[in-house]
Length: 275
Image (cartoon, rainbow, N blue to C red; front, side, top):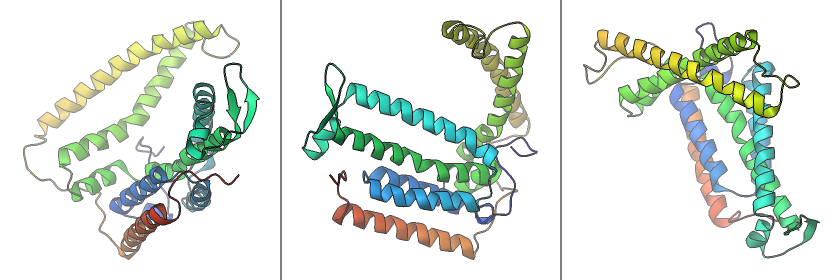
C-alpha cells in the first residue's frame, strides 16, 4: 500500500513505466487467452511467463503471499466441489473412464483428476498479471486511461474512487475487528467454536457498511460542491502519454492474441488429455 493509501506500490519496474492503456490491454489479452483454452501445456507456458513478469515487476513478496494463499484456498475449494458434484466429468470431455477412487455414490476417475489439475492451473495463471495490474497502476492513471479509451469519465472516475477506497475499507475493518476483540468477542482459532466465530464476524458487517455509507455521502457531497459532471469532458493530472515501450507492448498484445486464436482454431481445439 502506498503512502496515499492506495493499492498502488511505487516502483521503477518496466510495468510502472507503462501507460495505463498498455497495462489494460495486457490484462485483457492475458484474460482472453486464459478463457479461450483448456490445455495444460498452454497454461504451463503462461505460468512461467507470468512468474517472470511478476519477478520483474518488483512487487514485494509480503504483498504477494496473502493473495497466493487466497488463490490456493479457492482452488482447493473448487477442486473439492468438482470432485464431489461431478466426479466423472472428465469422461464427458475425453470419452474414456479410468476409475480410481470410490466415493460411495460414484467413482472419481483419472480423467476428472487431470481436468481439475488443468482448471486449477487455468485460474492460477491469472494471478500474476492481476497482481501486476493492481499494484503497478495508480487509480488516477487507470481512470484517465479508461477515459482515453472512450469510456465516459464519470464511469472512469467511479472506478478510480472504488480502487482508492479499498485500502480505507480494509483499515476500517481492522479497526472494528480490534474494537470487537477488546470487548471480548472471539475471532481467532481456539477462542470459540466455528459457529460462535462466524456469528461474531457479523458484528463487524453492520458498522463497516454504516461507515462506508457515510464515506460515500461525504465524497458525493464534495463532488457536488466542485460541480463534478457539469462539463462533457475533463482533463487528468496523472495521465501518461504513450511512449515507444507502450507501442511495443500493444503490438505484442495484438500478436499474442492473433497467435492464440490461430492455436485455438488449428492445434489446441479442446481439452488436452495425454493419457
